[in-house]
Image (tube, rainbow, N blue to C red; front, side, top):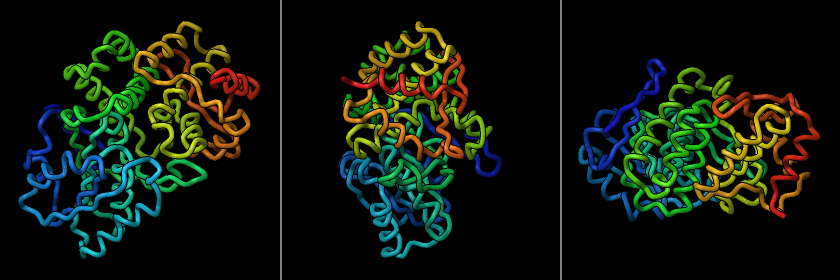
Length: 360
Protein backbone atom coordinates (compact mmCIF):
# COMPACT_ATOMS: atom_id res chain seq x y z
CA UNK A 1 0.00 0.00 0.00
CA UNK A 2 1.21 3.49 -0.89
CA UNK A 3 0.16 6.46 1.22
CA UNK A 4 0.14 10.01 -0.11
CA UNK A 5 -0.90 13.10 1.82
CA UNK A 6 -2.92 16.14 0.81
CA UNK A 7 -1.27 18.83 2.96
CA UNK A 8 -3.93 21.25 4.16
CA UNK A 9 -2.79 22.04 7.73
CA UNK A 10 -5.37 20.73 10.20
CA UNK A 11 -7.48 19.39 7.32
CA UNK A 12 -4.69 17.29 5.81
CA UNK A 13 -5.62 13.73 4.93
CA UNK A 14 -4.09 10.56 3.48
CA UNK A 15 -4.76 8.82 0.17
CA UNK A 16 -4.29 5.06 0.49
CA UNK A 17 -3.55 3.26 -2.79
CA UNK A 18 -3.24 -0.50 -3.01
CA UNK A 19 -4.95 -3.86 -3.28
CA UNK A 20 -7.35 -5.57 -0.83
CA UNK A 21 -7.94 -2.33 1.07
CA UNK A 22 -11.76 -2.41 1.38
CA UNK A 23 -11.66 -5.05 4.13
CA UNK A 24 -8.96 -3.37 6.24
CA UNK A 25 -10.78 -2.19 9.37
CA UNK A 26 -7.82 -0.21 10.64
CA UNK A 27 -8.00 2.19 7.69
CA UNK A 28 -11.56 3.14 8.60
CA UNK A 29 -10.97 3.16 12.36
CA UNK A 30 -8.26 5.81 12.09
CA UNK A 31 -10.63 8.26 10.44
CA UNK A 32 -14.10 7.66 11.91
CA UNK A 33 -14.54 9.81 15.02
CA UNK A 34 -18.05 8.78 16.07
CA UNK A 35 -20.00 5.52 16.15
CA UNK A 36 -22.49 6.19 13.35
CA UNK A 37 -21.78 5.49 9.68
CA UNK A 38 -23.91 5.96 6.57
CA UNK A 39 -22.62 4.26 3.43
CA UNK A 40 -23.78 5.93 0.22
CA UNK A 41 -23.46 3.76 -2.88
CA UNK A 42 -25.40 2.88 -6.02
CA UNK A 43 -27.21 -0.05 -7.60
CA UNK A 44 -24.15 -1.12 -9.59
CA UNK A 45 -21.53 -0.98 -6.84
CA UNK A 46 -23.65 -2.20 -3.90
CA UNK A 47 -23.84 -5.87 -5.02
CA UNK A 48 -20.09 -5.91 -5.59
CA UNK A 49 -18.56 -4.22 -2.55
CA UNK A 50 -21.13 -3.07 0.02
CA UNK A 51 -20.98 -6.22 2.16
CA UNK A 52 -17.18 -6.13 2.22
CA UNK A 53 -17.13 -2.57 3.52
CA UNK A 54 -19.90 -3.23 6.05
CA UNK A 55 -18.01 -6.28 7.35
CA UNK A 56 -14.97 -4.09 8.05
CA UNK A 57 -17.06 -1.66 10.14
CA UNK A 58 -17.83 -3.95 13.05
CA UNK A 59 -17.27 -1.24 15.66
CA UNK A 60 -20.00 1.02 14.30
CA UNK A 61 -23.73 1.34 13.73
CA UNK A 62 -23.86 1.14 9.95
CA UNK A 63 -26.72 2.37 7.75
CA UNK A 64 -26.88 2.42 3.97
CA UNK A 65 -28.54 4.32 1.15
CA UNK A 66 -28.42 2.90 -2.37
CA UNK A 67 -28.91 5.41 -5.19
CA UNK A 68 -29.61 4.88 -8.90
CA UNK A 69 -26.46 4.74 -11.03
CA UNK A 70 -25.60 7.36 -13.62
CA UNK A 71 -24.56 10.97 -14.21
CA UNK A 72 -28.19 11.82 -14.96
CA UNK A 73 -28.96 11.20 -11.26
CA UNK A 74 -26.38 13.69 -9.99
CA UNK A 75 -29.12 16.13 -9.01
CA UNK A 76 -30.60 17.95 -6.05
CA UNK A 77 -33.49 15.47 -6.15
CA UNK A 78 -31.12 12.51 -5.64
CA UNK A 79 -29.15 14.45 -3.02
CA UNK A 80 -32.41 14.71 -1.09
CA UNK A 81 -32.48 10.89 -0.82
CA UNK A 82 -29.23 11.06 1.17
CA UNK A 83 -30.56 13.85 3.38
CA UNK A 84 -33.79 11.96 3.98
CA UNK A 85 -31.88 8.83 4.98
CA UNK A 86 -29.76 10.82 7.43
CA UNK A 87 -32.84 12.34 9.03
CA UNK A 88 -35.03 9.24 9.03
CA UNK A 89 -32.28 7.20 10.69
CA UNK A 90 -31.73 10.03 13.19
CA UNK A 91 -28.03 10.23 12.53
CA UNK A 92 -26.37 13.05 14.44
CA UNK A 93 -23.42 15.37 13.96
CA UNK A 94 -20.96 12.59 14.83
CA UNK A 95 -21.95 10.55 11.76
CA UNK A 96 -19.39 9.71 9.07
CA UNK A 97 -20.61 9.34 5.51
CA UNK A 98 -18.76 6.87 3.29
CA UNK A 99 -18.88 7.40 -0.48
CA UNK A 100 -18.61 3.95 -2.08
CA UNK A 101 -18.64 4.35 -5.85
CA UNK A 102 -17.44 6.51 -8.71
CA UNK A 103 -17.31 10.25 -9.17
CA UNK A 104 -21.06 10.82 -9.01
CA UNK A 105 -21.36 9.07 -5.65
CA UNK A 106 -18.26 10.81 -4.32
CA UNK A 107 -19.44 14.26 -5.38
CA UNK A 108 -22.95 13.84 -3.99
CA UNK A 109 -21.83 12.24 -0.72
CA UNK A 110 -19.27 14.95 -0.15
CA UNK A 111 -21.83 17.66 -0.83
CA UNK A 112 -24.31 15.98 1.53
CA UNK A 113 -21.60 15.82 4.21
CA UNK A 114 -20.82 19.51 3.72
CA UNK A 115 -24.49 20.43 4.15
CA UNK A 116 -25.83 18.04 6.79
CA UNK A 117 -25.94 19.81 10.16
CA UNK A 118 -23.52 22.33 8.61
CA UNK A 119 -20.80 19.76 8.09
CA UNK A 120 -20.06 16.15 9.07
CA UNK A 121 -17.15 13.83 8.27
CA UNK A 122 -16.93 11.75 5.11
CA UNK A 123 -14.60 9.18 3.58
CA UNK A 124 -14.01 8.59 -0.12
CA UNK A 125 -13.83 5.01 -1.45
CA UNK A 126 -13.56 5.54 -5.22
CA UNK A 127 -14.30 2.43 -7.30
CA UNK A 128 -13.65 3.76 -10.83
CA UNK A 129 -10.34 4.78 -12.36
CA UNK A 130 -11.61 8.30 -13.00
CA UNK A 131 -12.60 8.81 -9.38
CA UNK A 132 -9.39 7.21 -8.08
CA UNK A 133 -7.11 9.48 -10.10
CA UNK A 134 -9.12 12.67 -9.91
CA UNK A 135 -12.55 13.36 -8.44
CA UNK A 136 -12.07 11.71 -5.03
CA UNK A 137 -9.07 13.95 -4.25
CA UNK A 138 -9.29 17.65 -3.52
CA UNK A 139 -12.67 18.22 -1.91
CA UNK A 140 -14.69 19.50 -4.89
CA UNK A 141 -18.26 18.32 -4.32
CA UNK A 142 -21.34 19.21 -6.34
CA UNK A 143 -24.48 18.26 -8.20
CA UNK A 144 -25.45 19.16 -11.76
CA UNK A 145 -28.14 21.52 -13.00
CA UNK A 146 -29.78 21.35 -16.44
CA UNK A 147 -28.10 24.68 -17.24
CA UNK A 148 -24.60 23.68 -16.13
CA UNK A 149 -22.46 20.87 -14.73
CA UNK A 150 -21.28 21.01 -11.10
CA UNK A 151 -22.71 24.50 -10.63
CA UNK A 152 -24.17 23.75 -7.17
CA UNK A 153 -21.65 22.50 -4.65
CA UNK A 154 -19.00 23.18 -2.04
CA UNK A 155 -15.31 22.73 -1.34
CA UNK A 156 -15.25 20.12 1.42
CA UNK A 157 -12.35 17.78 2.16
CA UNK A 158 -12.72 14.10 3.11
CA UNK A 159 -11.11 12.48 6.14
CA UNK A 160 -9.26 10.07 3.85
CA UNK A 161 -9.36 8.45 0.41
CA UNK A 162 -9.15 4.65 0.10
CA UNK A 163 -8.34 3.70 -3.50
CA UNK A 164 -8.50 -0.09 -3.81
CA UNK A 165 -7.12 -1.02 -7.22
CA UNK A 166 -8.93 -4.37 -7.08
CA UNK A 167 -12.23 -2.56 -7.70
CA UNK A 168 -11.02 -1.81 -11.22
CA UNK A 169 -11.34 -5.52 -12.05
CA UNK A 170 -15.13 -5.09 -12.27
CA UNK A 171 -14.95 -1.86 -14.28
CA UNK A 172 -16.07 -2.14 -17.90
CA UNK A 173 -13.72 -1.13 -20.72
CA UNK A 174 -15.58 2.08 -21.51
CA UNK A 175 -15.33 3.30 -17.90
CA UNK A 176 -11.65 2.34 -17.75
CA UNK A 177 -10.94 4.42 -20.86
CA UNK A 178 -12.91 7.31 -19.39
CA UNK A 179 -10.61 7.25 -16.37
CA UNK A 180 -7.54 7.25 -18.59
CA UNK A 181 -8.65 10.62 -19.97
CA UNK A 182 -7.96 12.19 -16.58
CA UNK A 183 -4.61 10.37 -16.38
CA UNK A 184 -3.64 11.82 -19.77
CA UNK A 185 -4.69 15.25 -18.52
CA UNK A 186 -2.02 15.24 -15.82
CA UNK A 187 0.68 14.56 -18.38
CA UNK A 188 -0.41 17.42 -20.64
CA UNK A 189 -0.99 20.04 -17.99
CA UNK A 190 2.27 19.87 -16.08
CA UNK A 191 4.18 16.60 -16.26
CA UNK A 192 5.75 15.89 -19.66
CA UNK A 193 7.72 12.94 -18.25
CA UNK A 194 4.46 11.33 -17.12
CA UNK A 195 2.98 11.94 -20.58
CA UNK A 196 5.93 10.18 -22.18
CA UNK A 197 5.54 7.29 -19.71
CA UNK A 198 1.91 6.97 -20.79
CA UNK A 199 2.93 6.83 -24.44
CA UNK A 200 5.12 3.85 -23.58
CA UNK A 201 2.64 2.20 -21.21
CA UNK A 202 -0.81 2.81 -22.75
CA UNK A 203 -1.09 -0.78 -23.96
CA UNK A 204 -0.43 -2.01 -20.40
CA UNK A 205 -2.93 0.47 -18.96
CA UNK A 206 -5.64 -0.65 -21.36
CA UNK A 207 -4.70 -4.24 -20.53
CA UNK A 208 -5.18 -3.51 -16.79
CA UNK A 209 -1.62 -4.42 -15.86
CA UNK A 210 -1.59 -3.86 -12.07
CA UNK A 211 1.83 -2.20 -11.79
CA UNK A 212 1.03 0.22 -14.61
CA UNK A 213 -2.37 1.12 -13.16
CA UNK A 214 -0.91 1.52 -9.69
CA UNK A 215 1.75 3.92 -10.91
CA UNK A 216 -0.75 5.90 -13.00
CA UNK A 217 -3.04 6.32 -9.99
CA UNK A 218 -0.20 7.21 -7.63
CA UNK A 219 1.35 9.74 -10.03
CA UNK A 220 -2.00 11.37 -10.84
CA UNK A 221 -2.98 11.62 -7.17
CA UNK A 222 0.40 13.08 -6.23
CA UNK A 223 0.19 15.69 -8.96
CA UNK A 224 -3.33 16.64 -7.89
CA UNK A 225 -2.44 16.67 -4.19
CA UNK A 226 0.45 19.02 -4.90
CA UNK A 227 -1.85 21.42 -6.75
CA UNK A 228 -4.62 21.28 -4.12
CA UNK A 229 -2.06 22.00 -1.39
CA UNK A 230 -1.11 25.19 -3.23
CA UNK A 231 -4.64 26.31 -4.14
CA UNK A 232 -7.48 24.54 -2.33
CA UNK A 233 -10.32 26.74 -3.61
CA UNK A 234 -9.27 27.16 -7.22
CA UNK A 235 -8.32 30.82 -7.09
CA UNK A 236 -5.15 30.24 -9.11
CA UNK A 237 -3.09 27.25 -10.18
CA UNK A 238 -5.80 24.67 -9.39
CA UNK A 239 -7.85 25.98 -12.31
CA UNK A 240 -5.30 24.32 -14.60
CA UNK A 241 -6.75 20.95 -13.54
CA UNK A 242 -9.73 21.87 -15.70
CA UNK A 243 -7.80 21.25 -18.92
CA UNK A 244 -10.39 20.14 -21.49
CA UNK A 245 -13.24 20.56 -19.02
CA UNK A 246 -14.80 23.77 -20.37
CA UNK A 247 -15.30 22.08 -23.74
CA UNK A 248 -16.11 18.73 -22.10
CA UNK A 249 -18.74 20.02 -19.70
CA UNK A 250 -20.51 21.69 -22.63
CA UNK A 251 -20.65 18.34 -24.42
CA UNK A 252 -21.98 16.57 -21.31
CA UNK A 253 -24.74 19.08 -20.59
CA UNK A 254 -25.56 19.66 -24.25
CA UNK A 255 -26.04 15.96 -24.99
CA UNK A 256 -27.86 15.28 -21.71
CA UNK A 257 -26.08 14.02 -18.62
CA UNK A 258 -25.18 10.37 -18.91
CA UNK A 259 -25.14 10.23 -22.71
CA UNK A 260 -21.40 10.88 -22.76
CA UNK A 261 -19.15 9.76 -19.92
CA UNK A 262 -17.24 12.59 -18.25
CA UNK A 263 -13.88 11.20 -19.35
CA UNK A 264 -15.04 10.84 -22.95
CA UNK A 265 -16.15 14.47 -23.04
CA UNK A 266 -12.90 15.63 -21.40
CA UNK A 267 -10.89 13.67 -23.98
CA UNK A 268 -12.55 15.63 -26.78
CA UNK A 269 -12.11 18.79 -24.73
CA UNK A 270 -8.36 18.21 -24.50
CA UNK A 271 -8.17 17.75 -28.27
CA UNK A 272 -10.04 21.04 -28.68
CA UNK A 273 -7.70 22.76 -26.21
CA UNK A 274 -4.65 21.53 -28.13
CA UNK A 275 -6.24 22.51 -31.45
CA UNK A 276 -6.96 26.05 -30.23
CA UNK A 277 -3.46 26.27 -28.76
CA UNK A 278 -1.98 25.18 -32.09
CA UNK A 279 -4.08 27.68 -34.06
CA UNK A 280 -2.89 30.36 -31.63
CA UNK A 281 0.72 29.50 -32.40
CA UNK A 282 1.44 28.15 -28.92
CA UNK A 283 2.05 24.46 -29.61
CA UNK A 284 3.30 22.53 -32.60
CA UNK A 285 1.23 20.35 -34.88
CA UNK A 286 3.40 17.46 -33.66
CA UNK A 287 2.38 18.03 -30.03
CA UNK A 288 -1.29 18.15 -30.97
CA UNK A 289 -0.98 14.92 -32.92
CA UNK A 290 0.82 13.20 -30.02
CA UNK A 291 -2.11 14.05 -27.75
CA UNK A 292 -4.65 12.85 -30.32
CA UNK A 293 -2.73 9.60 -30.84
CA UNK A 294 -2.54 8.88 -27.10
CA UNK A 295 -6.25 9.60 -26.65
CA UNK A 296 -7.07 7.28 -29.55
CA UNK A 297 -4.85 4.56 -28.05
CA UNK A 298 -6.91 4.88 -24.86
CA UNK A 299 -10.02 4.10 -26.96
CA UNK A 300 -11.46 7.56 -26.41
CA UNK A 301 -13.26 9.89 -28.85
CA UNK A 302 -11.47 12.88 -30.36
CA UNK A 303 -14.39 14.77 -31.94
CA UNK A 304 -17.52 16.35 -30.48
CA UNK A 305 -20.94 15.02 -31.52
CA UNK A 306 -22.36 16.46 -34.73
CA UNK A 307 -25.62 17.25 -32.91
CA UNK A 308 -23.96 20.14 -31.05
CA UNK A 309 -23.58 23.15 -33.30
CA UNK A 310 -20.80 25.68 -32.85
CA UNK A 311 -23.38 28.20 -31.61
CA UNK A 312 -24.74 25.72 -29.06
CA UNK A 313 -21.25 24.92 -27.77
CA UNK A 314 -20.48 28.62 -27.34
CA UNK A 315 -23.74 29.14 -25.47
CA UNK A 316 -23.10 26.19 -23.15
CA UNK A 317 -19.54 27.25 -22.40
CA UNK A 318 -20.66 30.74 -21.46
CA UNK A 319 -22.19 29.38 -18.24
CA UNK A 320 -19.08 27.40 -17.26
CA UNK A 321 -17.81 28.01 -13.72
CA UNK A 322 -14.57 29.43 -15.10
CA UNK A 323 -16.33 32.10 -17.17
CA UNK A 324 -15.57 35.56 -15.81
CA UNK A 325 -17.43 38.78 -16.63
CA UNK A 326 -18.91 37.23 -19.75
CA UNK A 327 -15.58 35.88 -21.00
CA UNK A 328 -15.09 32.15 -21.55
CA UNK A 329 -11.74 31.15 -20.07
CA UNK A 330 -9.83 28.09 -21.20
CA UNK A 331 -6.86 26.09 -20.03
CA UNK A 332 -4.60 26.08 -23.09
CA UNK A 333 -1.18 24.55 -23.71
CA UNK A 334 2.18 26.18 -24.34
CA UNK A 335 3.64 22.70 -24.83
CA UNK A 336 3.01 19.19 -23.54
CA UNK A 337 3.67 19.71 -19.84
CA UNK A 338 2.97 23.46 -19.68
CA UNK A 339 -0.50 25.03 -19.57
CA UNK A 340 -2.08 28.39 -18.79
CA UNK A 341 -5.56 29.66 -17.93
CA UNK A 342 -6.48 32.45 -20.30
CA UNK A 343 -9.28 34.46 -21.88
CA UNK A 344 -6.75 36.02 -24.28
CA UNK A 345 -7.48 34.11 -27.46
CA UNK A 346 -8.85 34.95 -30.89
CA UNK A 347 -12.60 34.26 -30.95
CA UNK A 348 -12.43 33.47 -34.64
CA UNK A 349 -9.87 30.76 -33.94
CA UNK A 350 -12.18 29.34 -31.27
CA UNK A 351 -14.93 29.03 -33.86
CA UNK A 352 -12.46 27.32 -36.20
CA UNK A 353 -11.57 24.82 -33.46
CA UNK A 354 -15.19 24.06 -32.65
CA UNK A 355 -15.89 23.54 -36.35
CA UNK A 356 -12.84 21.34 -37.01
CA UNK A 357 -13.28 19.16 -33.93
CA UNK A 358 -16.88 18.08 -34.60
CA UNK A 359 -18.08 14.87 -36.15
CA UNK A 360 -19.45 15.35 -39.68
